[in-house]
Structures are given as C-alpha cells and as structure tokens.
View 1 (cartoon, rainbow, N blue to C red):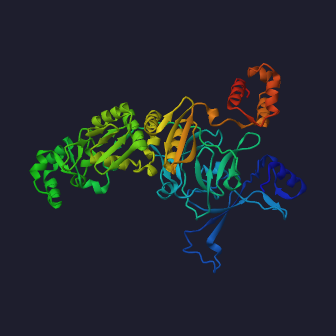
View 2 (view 1 turned 60 degrees about the vertical axis):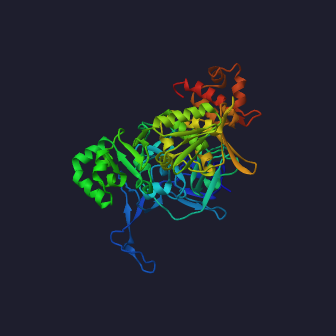
View 3 (view 1 turned 45 degrees about the vertical axis):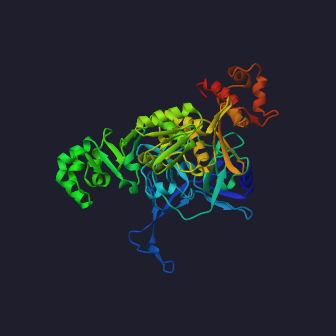
Length: 543
C-alpha cells in the first residue's frame, strides 16, 4: 500500500517516519520531496583502467564537497553518487523508495525511469517533427527536441534534449487507456494523473490502478515547419537505384563540364555508347551518384525515370493538399506492386480526384469502375519509401505526415476518412484492421488538437478497430472528477465569497456554486462548468 499525504503526516507525528531536517511543504500527495546535499562521489575513470571487486581501490572515487554559493555541474552521460540533505528513518513496518522528480527528468537528470527501446517518442529533429523509437534517439545521440509537458504550466511544447542514457534491461509494463491509447514504460516511469483535489500529480507506473485518469496532450502544437517536400533521391532503395536514370539541364551541364570523367565512369560501369547518353542529357543513376556534386545540383526541372520507361517524375515533389489527401486515401484503400499503385473506391468523384492528381504528377493511369491504378514503378517505389505499409494489417501513417503543417495533416486525415471512414452528425470515424494504424490515428488526432477514442471488435472473424473523433466532447468524455477542494482554494485566492463568485460566473443563485464546491450529490463535473468558472475567475486580476 502506498501512503497518502495524510498517512505520511500521521506517521511523522507518531515517529513511524523520521526526517531530519523536515519541511512540511515537502509533503506531496503520496511522497516527500528530499534535497540533494553538498557531498558527491565522482568516479575517476581517467586513472582507473578497470574495476576489480576483489581488490581494494580507494582511489576509484573522489569525494567532492560543494561550498555555499558554488555549483556542482553534472555533464550529460556522467554518473555520480550523491547524498540527500535529509536523514530518513523508518519503522519496521514501512519501506521507502527513492524516485527522481519528473520535472528534473525533463532537464536530463535521471535516477531510474525509462522507456523500452522500441517505444516511439515525438521529436523535432532537423526541422522535421516525427515519431522516432527512443533507442534511435539515444544511440544516435540525436540533437533534437522532444514533445513534452511544461513542468510548470503542463502545456505541451518542445524541449531540447540535453543528454542520452541507455540503462540495463528492466521489466516493461503496457499502460492501456480507455481511449485506446497504449504506452510501454518501466515500473519507475512517472505519468501525470489527477489527485482527489483535481491537481495534476506524477504517479509511478507501478502505482496505477484501473480507473486512474492519465493526462495526454490536448494538442501537439504547430511550429515553423518548412514546406513538405519529398526527395525521391532519398526514398528510392539501393536495389532500385540500379534501374533508374536521371536527365535534364543539370545532367547536360555535367556533360559539358566533366565529359571526360563521365566517359570513364560509364566505361567502368560496363556501359557503352557515350554519345547516346550525352545526346539525351541522360545518365544511369549509379553513374550520376558517382559523379561528385551532380545529385546535389538536381532541380525540380530535372527528371528521374526507370530504364525503358517513357514516364518521368521530378526528383522533388512538393506536398500540397491534394497529394496529402492522396496519401491518406492510400493508407485507407491503397495497395502496391513493384510496377503499379492501386487505389480503390466506389465513389466516382473520389476516383476522378485521384486521376487528376496522378496525371498532374506525370503518372499514367488505368481506370476501372472501382479503382485507379498508377502504372509507374518509380511512383510505386516512392510510396514504399514513404513508409505507409503494404497490406491492410501493416498500414501506417507515414512518420513525415506528423510533421506537416496542420492544414496538410487535415487533408491527409480527410483522405483517410474518404477511403475507409464514415462521417456522422456526432462523430467522424476511421476503420482499420491494423493495430498500429489505430494507434497512429489517435496520435494524429492529438496533432490536430481533437479528442479521439478507439474501440476494438471482430467482424466476420476479422479484427477491426474503430477510431472515432466526436463532434461533442461529452460523447467521449462525459465528465471529469469533481475538484471541489481545488475550486474552493481558487475562489479563496481570488478573495471572493460564494455569493460574489456565483454572480461573477453568471449563476442566478449562490447555492448553484455552493452545491458544486460541496460536491452535493455528485462526484463529477462537466468540462463546460469548469471552463465557465475559469473564465469568471480569470477576470479577477489578483487570481
């Protein structure tokens, strides 16, 4: 059993817990804050080649005492032993555990809490916002920012990564929320929950119980994101590179500048007919890759194509609303083969739209009453490289889509719904048999600042997820726990009695607010009521 703040105070009074020196302000809802003392032991790895537990190694560590007013600097990746300022003693019927505060963890100071290697985190890296597995972030030591709660305001923002740490293997817990969201963490990892007073507090994973309300971001905010742009040079696999050619003014300039070197590269690759390639301002992609600087010089006016094909694509494709919509439709109703991409739908207006987009890109199409097929191996390779999956059970939202501007994310979501969704007056739904896609859509809803939930069922023996975004928040979240003590505290801080506060909030009778604050006949409250009170108190400068 975890002691509450009330039980902790009782144990302190009867001597079951002794903390010296003690500050009553340090008591938290289910813990007591301790402070770091001035003494640290630093490992002298510059003079110790190895550690042998059988040998006495007095010089292995060095005691450091920090003087008043001085700082002790712990650099990223370093490990030290520290001590607490407080001395703690416990009775024989109690056991204590030392945990790092999540606010310090966001600054990079870790004691022991972590995520499993494959768990994705939303990071902003090189101007791109996308989910990355945490092991990739740590092992590559990415210079990035991570999406997280502000420790003071709990608003979601971007926090620079200040250090990386890979710890030993630990037991993994999967936390499942009623909305369908899932996260895998260690037992010591902290999540934010609501305490009985309605305040957000950190709670260890091992302390979570069924029915506990866990905070998730309301919105992953937009940032100054560069225009969404696809680079086919990076999306095409190494295997397919051998089948590609590039052409255009940049290649023509390369022939004029480095004709002798290109002749040698063609000869080394076993390719004859130098004049054939020069007359057409065209080069095999592997040869273009071997010519220093050529790929970097390619522009939108140049072209990539597959050997033997009459159809070409620009090396760069700007993602606009139509292309974002097309990608959403592909995730819902698309399939691909090495030489073609097919999008299926019975709505002819949707097929008309698909045909216009593919023709604009220069992709030849073949149409049936229920589908459109883009006949291009290069376009198929681009779809593969974006990372949207293949069959129905492996479909994913491409990582890059999370980092698009919100308007493009909306277009992508529109295509997803047009392909395999439904629109009703009360909600918009997406249906999928892919577990990962259901999780992706829930995260995409956060990116758009929209509430979402998910439910799972089997239809004709097949697994099926429904991810739904209700137009009325109370269709998803009917109520929240009544924070009666918090409401009383806020009103008191504003210097208001119940009568004046009721008038300020627009209630006809003071008893309306009295019933809320006393929890008369209720243990929950509508979100609209909380917003009404917040707006009222916000008009008081001292609140």
